[in-house]
Amino acid sequence: MALNKEVFKTRALTALIFVAVMAVGLFWNAWSFIGLFTIIHFGAWYEFVKLMKKIHGAKFLPYCLPGLVYITMPVLMMFDLALTWQLYTTDNTNTVLYNQLIPCGIIFSIWINDTMAYIVGSLIGKTPFSKISPKKTWEGTGGGALLCVVVIGLLGYFIPAAKVLAVQHWVIIAAICAIFGTAGDLLESKIKRMADVKDSGSFMPGHGGFLDRFDSLLVATHIVWLYVQLFV
Image (cartoon, rainbow, N blue to C red; front, side, top):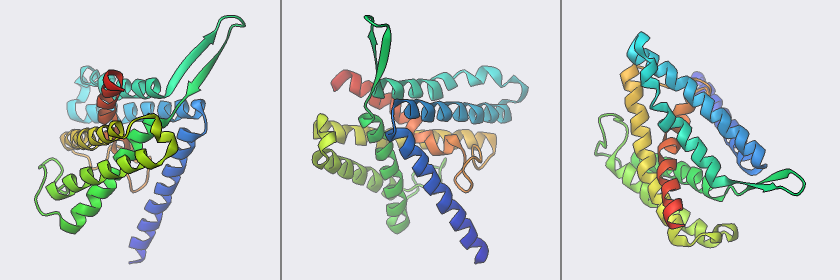
């Protein structure tokens, strides 16, 4: 029991540090945001290359190319959603306009979906969702998605800063994150199964690596970015 308590304490402390780092990166300023996602980018790439080496051996290099779409593109899309460069040619200075609203919406949607899916699945989950991830259930996945949409919709309605976007946009963004975030989680689980590893890395004791933490984000960001470009 003592060991279990120690493991729980380690995981809880790691999770708190993770949330604090994410909050500083997201809410401090544009440069903290750039720094946060630069770290995520290279951390995810490091783990992805290691996984490709485990799967494909010495011939791993060509199999790393999809990482440009899987890892680099969503990070650049996050920058595009949050940052606007303004160049003032009169005095040769420039500034960065930073609006973290949509990136925060994506991240919070994924966190809420994951948390609610875990809770609902633990309480009433019975039907396996996928052989790739045996712990997932249809009840947990569906319940997590539904609650994610409801919570984000309510936040979009009641939080003044979020009213820049109509509530229906927040609902759709939350639905996209729930659906494609789950797809991202399954994709990473498949890659780990092929590499015969439990976690993609160990930068967060008890919680895995960069890909374990951001697998949902990497896939969902593609679709949210496309939706924003077309409809917002």
